[in-house]
Length: 247
Image (cartoon, one colour):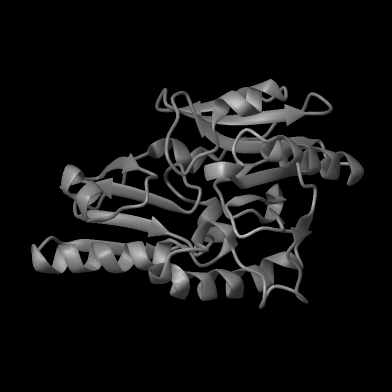
């Protein structure tokens, strides 16, 4: 197993690729947007660590206090994404990346590491099975489906913010809360706009463009959340086929 990993920095950000959108031209606009978002986050202690290959092998995490998610707690690291795909699976890369994050948390004197997951495996969320092998435990739940997992070093644990537990909004039209943490999002927004325009479906897009907005969201959120008829539907990024299932 190669151990040649790279951390993105302000010095190498422009010429290094973002693993998840490496092979898809339609997401290159999102790559530029994500890199701009990262420039502000890296100085806050945000970490994007990847294998030095042209593949999807990376972890992305940040101090919980500055992580754009509706989770509260003191002195934790929050994992946005841990992704190993294709031929790189089964070679220990996920283990190495997660161990790096855990060791980083300990070196910084953090209270632990946390991540959003779910009882059953869901796209765009970290798989629970891997995390429990490392000692992560469920410390908060929502809708008997979504779970906040924590690896605590001192017995303290984070939790979902109280606003999250609403899981409902007053607007009845298709409503999407979105951030720019994921490079897939700009293209997903364009697909949703096109579909809704062509089918005369009312659409309400709400940009989460500040830390405060992210912390005060009325639902679970990693970078994307969908409501329809006032009810929370999914954190699954939408394309046309998935959108048809909802509306």
